[in-house]
Amino acid sequence: DSGVTQTPKHLITATGQRVTLRCSPRSGDLSVYWYQQSLDQGLQFLIQYYNGEERAKGNILERFSAQQFPDLHSELNLSSLELGDSALYFCASAPGGDEQYFGPGTRLTVT
Amino acid sequence: DQQVKQNSPSLSVQEGRISILNCDYTNSMFDYFLWYKKYPAEGPTFLISISSIKDKNEDGRFTVFLNKSAKHLSLHIVPSQPGDSAVYFCAASGGGADGLTFGKGTHLIIQP
Image 1 (cartoon, each protein chain N blue to C red):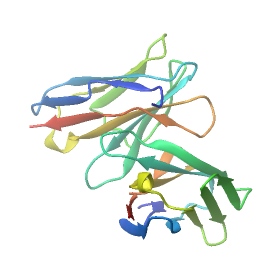
Image 2: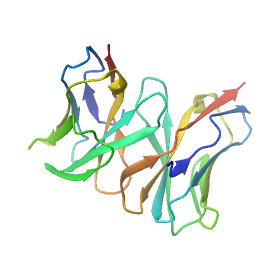
Image 3: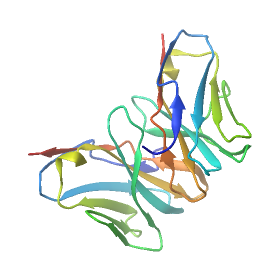
């Protein structure tokens, strides 16, 4: 158990809809990262937050957004969903170094 | 363009033998490398890492070797155990890249 929690575990929704994925980092970790893992790709970095502020952006679509709240939990919002957004979404937290600790992931299925 | 490559999608090794997983990278500015292990339906678990100023790091049965001139790293597992069967991801950080850059993984199967 990494100490990082993600909810929900599974999510099935229709095209065009909007969903919110939630992540609680390990106690004391200020950084939260979001990654997407689809079938034909490895883990792709989406976005990083540090202590409530956006720190870095990766391959994140404009339809996706994230935020980190004062209690350090983070939410990833995915809107106007397309079939190709079906993937595993992982959240990771880090105490400040390069080592990141991953949650169990949310499997999103868009039908 | 993939900056971190794991060219073997799968690897089968007998229990008790050495498992060697390979990883190549193209970005010479990467300065920290990590290996993660992933079981089905779980998130990746951090295994071992190495800084670019070192060429070897050891932790129990796991050793990571870094060859900077060849832009190559490898993970050695000795001896291999059935519980080592999992997907192993190589990742890199630094070099102007944000977040970790992952390879596509190698599925290691330990046979009894």
